[in-house]
Amino acid sequence: MTNIELAELYERDIEKLIIEINLFKNEENVWKTTGSIKNSCGNLALHIIGGLSFHIGTTLANSGYIRDRDEEFIAKGTSRKALTEQLRTLIPSIKATILSMSEERLNEPHPKFFDKENATISYVLTQLLLHLNYHTGQVNYLRRAFE
Image 1: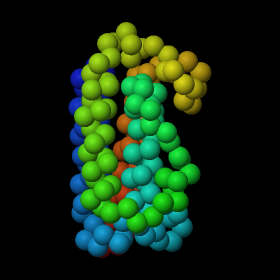
Image 2: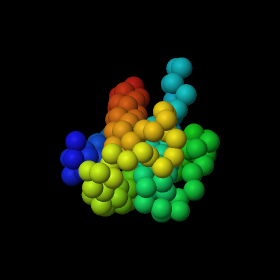
Image 3: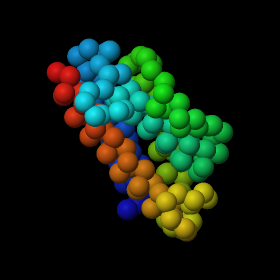
Image 4: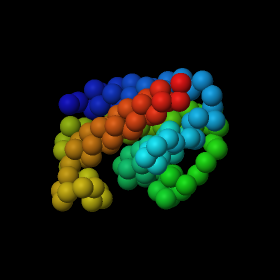
């Protein structure tokens, strides 16, 4: 996969999450859970924001973002508008970071341990994209449970 394709997929899939969050008929439901589901859609959005901001922003682009992963699952009540603005802000920075990388750079080892030794930057970016989509599916499912 080229850096152009990867950048386009991140933009497309972050936009999908923004759409899902905006489809909630009742904004309060963004922060609700049901049954055995422990993470609200708001917390999943914060988790995606934190993960991408750290793994791409800090690790690859030296943005200086400091992640508080626990807070991503504890925080409550951020407005839908603020969540979607934070997600939308990620798009240009992620795209710029990925587009700045040559094929050779994408095939270099990721600077931090991810889930296996010597994982390439391309591998980590692909895993993060898959993770984004996994949580977007959870948001979709939970949103529909509240309709």
